[in-house]
Length: 335
Image (cartoon, rainbow, N blue to C red; front, top):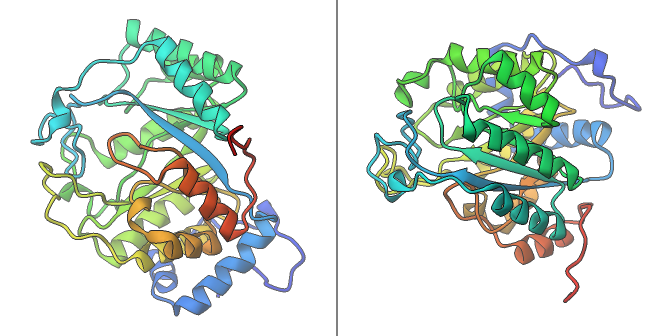
């Protein structure tokens, strides 16, 4: 049982729980799928009526050459992938052109990624601030992911109009050292605290399929769900094993595992945007529809993510229409 009364007419944010245990969450992850989906459905319909799905577009502004050694990432200088030499940064005009195209295709959030260990003051950061302001002037939400940052940098991003800052925890505190050694879990938490203190929305999730246990998944969700307030956005990623990374020999996860992760995230964090992120292309239409049923109400939308492919725009439109979810998009003129 959870803290939600299925007979209640509504859901009050004051009733949200922030003291989940790992065992409670593990029990949810291992629950009968039909019962889990039913429970997630009740909560999702109360907290997010209308089955609205947010479309977020993601652009890699600076690709490759990252100093971190994340085992899943083809952008790390420690991993033997083709992306490690692609260290140039897109300019302001290029980014705003991409943002305009994203808006024209229906996206209402534009996310920009820099393959950095941390933000450093200087020309690149000044350019980032201009990009954020430019994206906001287009009427889009603006999200940045660029590693660690200082309190002053967070404040300047907030002043530029940044909507959200993404900084994923990746996995559980217990499994974390198996995935990365160049940044501690506590440093990730401190980055999120700086973002929150600056008044910027927190976008924080993780990746499944990296060899972690169900208990590890529960532990990751525990950290997220016990934040107060909950992260406004929770991206759920499935590992995309890229050649040249230490995890390139791992098989794709069972899509039902992704459905379970989405459902439990929805139960724990009723008002958060639960976003289907990397690995969505591998799920297939049926599993994606089950994820919408389980409580996913945001997707990365477009032809590519930071370094991996994503379902094409037209395919997404058809899928969302089939699923009967509401999307705030503008139809292409040619349609």
